[in-house]
Length: 171
Image 1 (cartoon, rainbow, N blue to C red):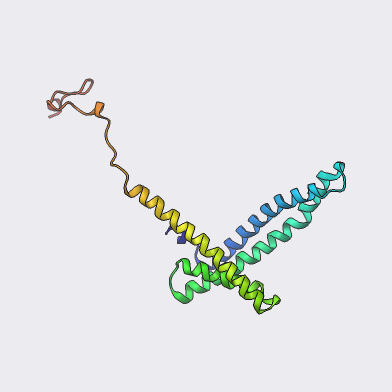
Image 2 (cartoon, rainbow, N blue to C red):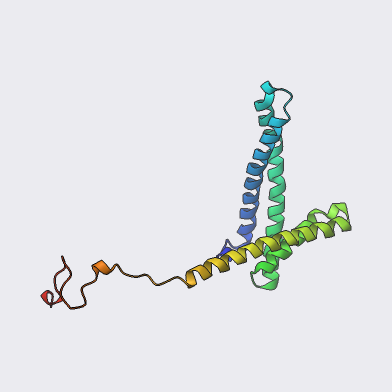
């Protein structure tokens, strides 16, 4: 459950908002660089078209990601406060509510569809996280005990191993 050992709630919102902005700017920058390069009018203008697309669109994509991350964390912190515990259901519910709130201007049908997509996406993410945690925990649970190097152990007859003084010399 190390996933839930994070910043306290008021700071978590700011942290997640900044992380989402950074992720959106980097991912959007890569995507827009490729798109601007491909859509440039001529071969000589490809680098300039790529840079212009990144300059114009990457901050907008980062801002959209930041809004999503901030709203998700705000709802998640509200659910933690309301329910009194941190578990995967908070994240799943936060994803669904975030999708619904962001689609509110498009009408109730879009809200329901977006809420379902947000909830399903977060359920898949949480499910994969739980499966990975259980798999790695089971891998360490059945590990064989560590064996010592037998060449470093004294012989069974009581004579000292080569290079080691006998036990009687110290006592």
